[in-house]
Image (cartoon, rainbow, N blue to C red; front, side, top):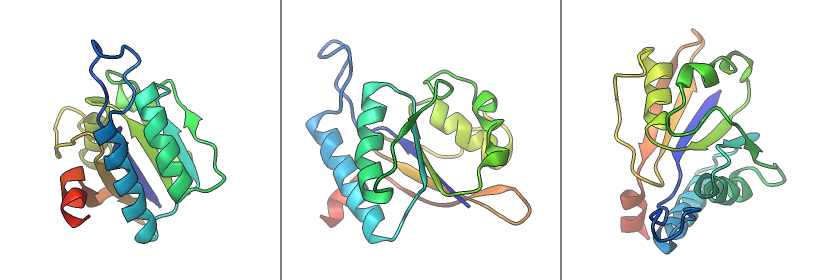
Length: 157
């Protein structure tokens, strides 16, 4: 089973738009990410986001490419400062490839919690529009399979 942990695309500053939608750059980054992942054959059966506009916009674009016909779900447990342990309790029932779109510092804390069981030990550096693919092995432990940051995709387009 694979878990794709995505930080939402670049968002407008709060003083520009308090709802913080994706910027033009954020939309372009997510579009490139969706196209790249679709071309690579990534498919998911669940897409979960925080409900904040920037995460919902990112999730919708990725779901269209990677999970056609799947309606993204909202979770109230993946906001920026939420405890990853509160969200992880559901992970035992995760048996299908899932994409989660959220915010910092939550995404880095969830990643660290799942991989090294210490949410305070940051093991990767997200940028808006980044994705980390985790895979759960036969031993039920998660490991990092790969990571893509938006600047890698902008060089290839």
